[in-house]
Image (cartoon, rainbow, N blue to C red):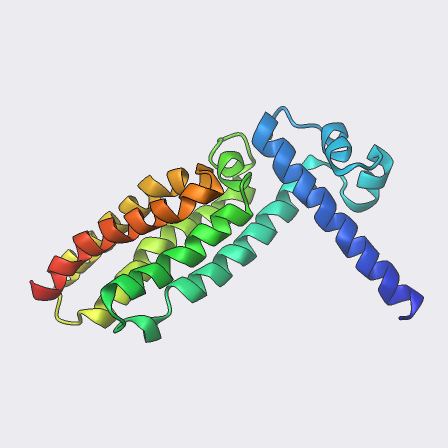
Length: 201
């Protein structure tokens, strides 16, 4: 492998290492109280090494936001694939909720950081827009599954289903790994129980 691509790969790994460390420190201390020294310590590097890749903590938060948005978009594409709309309802619900659970498990510091209110709005706004789009994506799946359902009823159902998911997501993410599947099963049951009467409405 030529030296230049090898150096680029090392640099990319270092940036990911620093971004991972920033996620931990931001989640523990909050954005306002986090310092680049604490992030460098968490990453196991010197502050000078951190500054070779990121000018300040806002640049780290921006990298973290960019990474999360990319992962969230990919999760949306898997979760809200309209080709799945006619699957048996429990299977459809399972295939919708798992990518969304996985992206939150993979980014444990993100929710604490981006809901804290102390991060610059220009960093949080695009992510909020993606999160708010979930209800619309759920409504699209319901429309594909139950095309005769009135639009107002469909949109209400999508909003309620999204709230049910959000209400249990925190429990799932913070549960010990051994208990997580049990909570995912309960979330599936709650959503199927709520959505199934719509199919015979």
